[in-house]
Image (cartoon, rainbow, N blue to C red; front, side):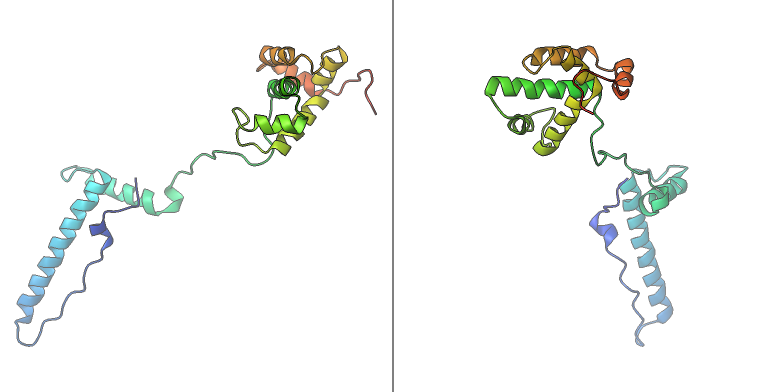
Length: 192
């Protein structure tokens, strides 16, 4: 339903004129009332048409009542689902590994710095329009996560972005790996 009515429904009725002393007041008032009734009837037809309600619908009054309530009483409206949450994105482990792979690939292929790689990534999906500094922070956090630290300790470094991408694809949606990443583990060369 829409609150944008056709122009005829946005124009209020003109005030009823008063009869002059020279005319029959009773007839004049009767004519004014008939005119007003005709105007109301015309506007009601436009309102029904606006809401898609047929004139001969047996539930006309109820449908019109609910259509007007839905449009004009905020407590009866349904809130739109929030399109975007504010704040830090909730990355999965797979997303973090994929980010590490993408940054590593650009660093190797184009000789870019981490922030340079993040700037380049922000120009295409899935990082389109993200802030490069925020993406760099997410990359730095991803490198510190336990699962990534374990892979690095096992010898997987940034010279193999293809393997980081393979890990990202392999562990997509794997709850066990997500749980593993929440556990603080002791790794060799870990600074305390």
